[in-house]
Image 1 (cartoon, rainbow, N blue to C red):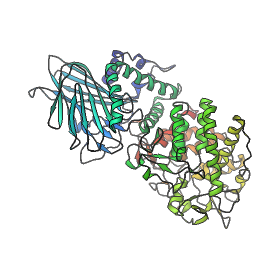
Image 2: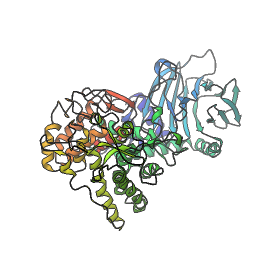
Image 3: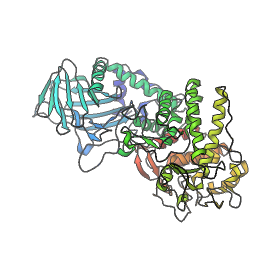
Image 4: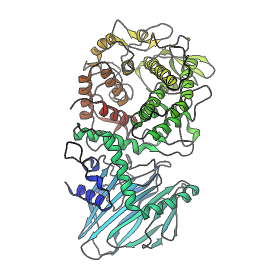
Amino acid sequence: MNKIKTWVSLICLSVGVLSCTQAKKGEDKPIVRDYLNQIIDLSYTPNQESRCGGWFVDQGAWIGFTPPQQDLWLDGFCGPFSLDSRRWLAKSAVVVSPDNQEQEKLSFGEVNYYPGLLSMQSVGKGVQVDQRLVFADSNTVLLHLKIQADQAQSFKLSGQDWLVDSKFEKNGHTLLVTHPTGEITVLSFPSDLEIELTDQNYSVQLGSGDTFVAISTFVNEKEKLSGLQKAQAYLTNAAGVFANNNTRWDGYLSAILRDDMPQAYDRVAAKAMVTLMSNWKVSRGGLLHEGMVPSHAVGYFMGYWAWDTWKFAVPLASLTPELSKNMIRSMFDYQLEDGMIIDCIYVDTAENNARDSKPPLAGWAIDAVFEATNDTTFLREMYPQLLAYHRWWYEQRDHNKNGICEFGSTDGTIVAAAWESGMDNAIRFDGAKMVQNGPNAWSFDQESVDLNFFLAYEYGLLEKFAQVLNLPFEEPNYTEHIQDYFFDQDTGFFYDKRIFTGEFVKDPGSEAYIPFWASLASKEQMDRAMTYFTDTTMFATYIPFPTIAANNPKYLPNGYWRGPIWLDQTYFGIKGLRNYGQDNLADEYTRQVFDRLDGLTGDKPIHENYDSHTGGCLKAPHFSWSASHLLLLYKEYRGS
């Protein structure tokens, strides 16, 4: 065991966290954090020359921290960074340094990111400083400083580079820093330490040993008043905070990790959970329930999207069922009177987008929660809302009223209709035009295979829910003929279809995975589609199941929805194989995903999408729906 693992194991024991040394069944490897060290490399010191690519976040917080870079070292965690205002409130709120100018400065020792815990080490002549950081709740992190020195020395705590024009005041052993953004950072120190205010900073003297500091950030005075008492309580029971943190993450990981998987694949699953928890956000402003953002690392992703939310809720339903329920509620909070679920919502409701909806996967999410919890009260709450949303598609997105729907928009624009499909620039829509269905209701002149199979899948779930709730179910069944409607017998594949001509849009793409994911295609159709799914020039690429067949002349390896791998689509394809008895191929493709995506089993973050030919990372890091589907792939993998 290396030095940092030894340190974490010993410090866990020192605060009573005994489960750090539990063993995974049948193996010698520990069950939780010990063998999941440096799960993601977050090292970043705020500077003007580069942008941070992600933060340590947990407990639904709107603040984040990073360990410093080795080449831009400072002896404290960087932050807090406000994920809402997108500002560094301080380069570092708590930096430790020798109090005597003649003492040797500390230098880099180690940094590490375990699931739910950030650690760093600084060293000097006869001195070692170990620091650990965990989230106590959504407002407060608890910092543990352990200073070891060969001889009696004094040290100083201070902040570094606070946000300009911040105002400082102290109240006993508490430092309050009010930032020009309106946010308030509070540092709570033990009662035996005295705070001295300096010009735009503070200093605290201390000696060797263990010290705990609570670092809190509040968005307003009301939040601060309730949060200050909690911060003091955390400081009083610091060992309990670290023990609770370990218990919570031990619970997550014990529930996720399998006994029969290699450690490399365990890292994938653990990293996926870390990614999801970093994107969990408590309610704020217009976000009326807690939920999950696509990526905390990108400012424009700091809201909730509809089909993203449904995808996040599914793998978390058995792990954090209340969070999954609230995520689902968060989107239904803004359901319109006609039943529409709008595209996305934000803290500032002026940024909400109601120009389009998103593919109907809400039923999938609700069913995952019900199957995990058997909570009929939640099912009864959601059923009428889900039914209204299901009906909305046939009322507002079925241009010729033939029971087959199209993606569209409320404003008649092609761009919003493409957003509604979730595949913003997909090749299949290159020749599409808009047709009006009624006031504020427009469709593509193109019926989409994925949309209608999603709706057919949801129809079956609504019927199931009605039976569970002992409710009548008299919805018209539009699903029976879609199996043949979208299947081209000449080529043996599923395609979108033009409304007015009945022509297939013959650009083979990932929309064709959905009939198999939904188990609504015939065995014969799967047999014919296997020609496509096993062809290395089409969908059996280096990373399998790209968004468009790789031999399409319009295919672009970094073209967003015009070629790259999106892991939700890859999951739909692999799950489809399993549904039709192709488990060996599904396992082979899963291994290709885990083994070939750049940095996935290493310390790189999970990305929004990937190059199908190289596995290279594309677009946003720390991406939630990629993480969600990696968890599902890990869970459903049958190989060894």
